[in-house]
Image (cartoon, rainbow, N blue to C red; front, top):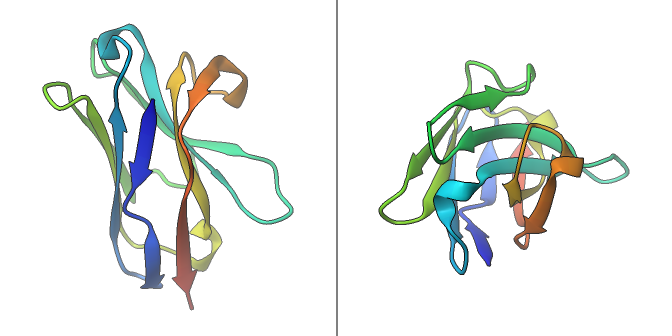
Length: 118
């Protein structure tokens, strides 16, 4: 089970931190990814982290602004989002799986809405 939280409404240039709490599976066996889906658009990968070795991936659109981290003791992954832009507005989902593509992830949490006003 994956539980995402931390979304909200923020002005452009602001920050939010999303959390993804995992339970019911061996955390270290999977990568944890953050994905987002804006209205009328396909779900896209934002960032992911390997729970076992800490390797990270960021989409070009968020590099330098978002930071993913993992607290393995708490089975929780965080996504620190800084310098938010209106185009970051979407429902953000966390998922467990492999790789950087949506297709590699089979376990999904519910989404959390992020809205960035201009």
